[in-house]
Length: 238
Image: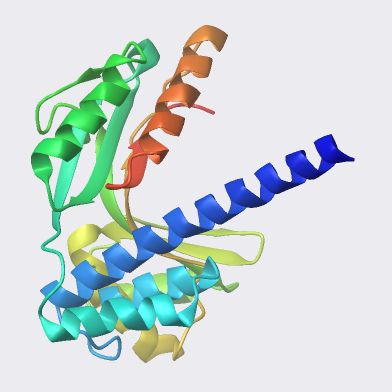
């Protein structure tokens, strides 16, 4: 019984640690988006999107409210975005997005992850040219043509509109995010987005050998343990 209890206790601890890290990352992102824009999700579309994502991940309301209140107060940490690009095992492309209050520390921690996994950090732009910086909006629907018509009617630069399994997914350049959401709201009212994000989408994917795939998973795990890392994008064919 003692061993079973110990396993259970470790499982609970790991779950608690994972939740704490998730809450911290969302709290930091909400704080930065609210501080750089306006701390009101009604007028700040990006803030509303982050809050909606946080709620889907079951982030408690008090975590969200505390981050917004901190942004309203103008104090708190001075976080800034940082992006690192590099090549992972097998030559795959990796983009690491961070929010940091200490760029020197963050760079050192990210570089350590790459160094220990047969990977190499590159210069800005060395990898991102292989990705499209896209706004992705996905919601339930069955008339992709009508969606495309609504977007084009508002002069939105549409990259693609896909329809599959009762879901419609809109891809636009990241700079068209606000315009696309406004166009969809005017055409269809309040939509319940299952995906509402700006991501780096690979233009093509890279297959890995079993050995490189295992090392790549180690790289992802190490980056996930870096507190300042918010998102990792890659072109690996999983």
